[in-house]
Image 1 (cartoon, rainbow, N blue to C red):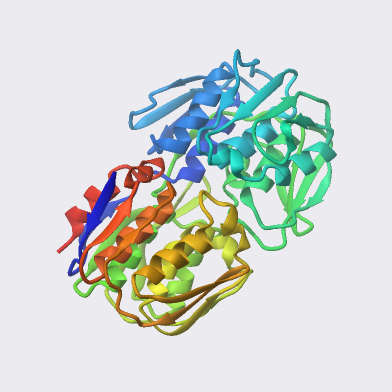
Image 2: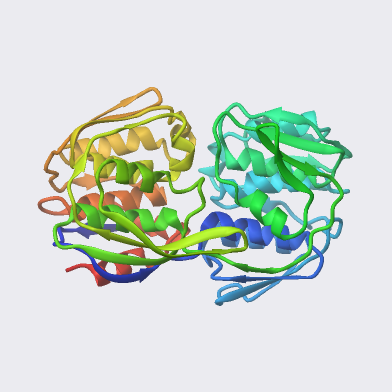
Length: 428
């Protein structure tokens, strides 16, 4: 099924984004191994997060209210999970697969985990290698690089580990395993990534601390269930922010969006490019900052995005590329090779799609070079089942002349059900 998009004059009004996907995943997982109940307000009831809920239910965790405004996780305690009766299915969710591999490594039973065709093509060795160094036993029919994997519960030992790439998924998998390990587990990254796991661990009472340029967790500490208020997802807000900047008659207020320092790289880069973005009503809940984001139309100038910045906007690079097509000068994005192993090869796909619409863009081994401003024209573009690619191309379509046809737009439901309806409702 495809979606046809035409140009709009602007976006106006007040919007509320779906709950943050990363925080929703972690609230489920940590709530599952905590003592007592965890009440999750504004949980993202779709796609990847539902895969996490299904996996935890298969492991014996009672979860109420899925599909409703508040989800309640009845914690089984640190050692209360039980073996599943069948293979665990992470669906399309790499977060589910990688973090659950860390969580399962320290259990007293064996588990097998798989995913859909797309997820089975994505690398798992980045978490398997350090978990094996902790004493985990993990194997699969294709080795330890791809799903499906069998994780045989083992006695784990804390380690110090320097990740080869800045990745919150690697870091979080090791911290979850570290809860079950003897001693202390320390994870250091080449550049800081989002720290939702660390913040939530602290809220729930874990012995976790920043030290030695990394983060350390001490094994065996008990977590306590709590109330988690999930902010709006900045990765979802990104598409509306860029669309508002690039269309002539825009003024949007996006309410209570998460402002975690590891997630707002796109906002910082857009402001460097001259975007008229301001913040209001800043608060902190569960150690996670949030604010209203106010954005209006405005011209952009080109910039350079370094490898150090990429972990803070890794999910937003496709929509940043759309913005760069309208910026004055040459924008360079470097150190983004990680995008080649996402739901699609995002560097290759965004280049092909935007080039078909008239953009002056080329890919490098680890990034993109984009010259602008260049008027875009409608074309038939591909999502390849990648939700962020589909939304980025819809935004490209609303600033392009003529009709843009995006294939398989249903994949958007993985992170943002109702995206098209919200965009249409705000359009002027």
